[in-house]
Image: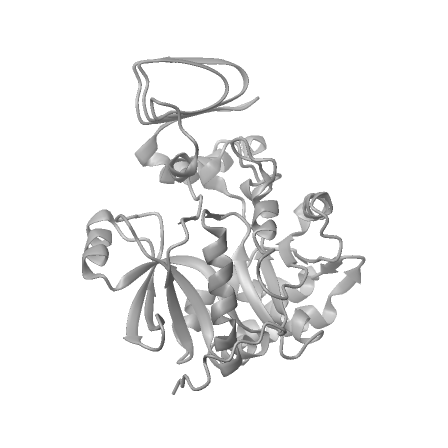
Amino acid sequence: MLEYNNMENEDFSVPIYPVILAGGTGSRLWPLSRESYPKQFLKFGNNELSMLQTTIKRLEKIKNCQPPLVICNDAHRFIVKEQLREIGETESSIILEPFGKNTAPAAALASFYLTSKNKSAIILILAADHFIQDMDTFCDTINTYKNYTEKNILLTFGIKPNKPETGYGYIKKGDYFYKNSFLVEKFVEKPNYQIAQEYINSGRYLWNSGIFMFTAQTYLDELKKYRPDIYDVCKLSINDAIQDDKFIRIKDSSYENCPQDSIDYAVMERTKKSIVIPIDIGWNDVGSWSSLWDISEKNNDGNVLQGDIITLESNNNYIFSEHGVISTIGIKDLIIIQTKDVLLIAEKDSTQKIKQVVERLDSLGKCKYK
């Protein structure tokens, strides 16, 4: 049973190790996001930093924050190394996965690696491609709740929902625990609109941010209990890994049989030690063009325009041109993306289906456009 004795004892001298998950292809932001250069490495709008770089820079106000450990696909190793260099992160290490196996194995690799450096390491797991508007509140929240992890608690952070979003997973709050924290009752996948509205009306559901904080050892202990198959493969994979400068190379032969699972379902939903903290930080997972429109600066007509664009009587569109002029008349609520080799036109409310288009490229023999 979880206890909350001495929760007030804040010790900012305890280091925290950020683990940045930078895998994935970002197919819902195709055609700008490609397998060879996915969205987490792109700069959107007028941003001077990529999404990965922005994620790392927002950690600066976290007390005693250590250089981040980045986990990415082996094919993207030089992109990551260069983007880290550009922002002065020369002490960061990079774990190279030969295959993506979802977040539970990635967190296990990071945990095994970091416990070899510091047996009591506290890790903060973040996706490289999320947007957080209120960075001060985010950092303050991490600083405030870091001490929970020393009680063998596994923390996740749930976003207070402001609409029935069908593109996000949800966390159902259980019983009240202590100081704005709740037991985790369950995780649920992306619902349809009607169910999402029911979640909002109940007041018991939060958006799943994919942000976690716990000691690496507590995570490994719970993973060993509930998913020993993942635990064993990841332990072997780290033991067999090759250290090459900043790269920790995971061998194909060690990792290929690792089961796929998320932190949510492998550990957080099964353990008796998981706690969710509701937060309001202006979070967005930037999982589609419509969500990117939500967070982007718009003109008086509600349009987000990037490139050489001319619009007449056009409203609430996201229009991007990498080359050439795009002109629109009398359209609304559309996504128009023109790259050098692909033109995408979609209704804003249908952009979650873009992944289906990307999947069809294989069957049509058009893999070069992925």
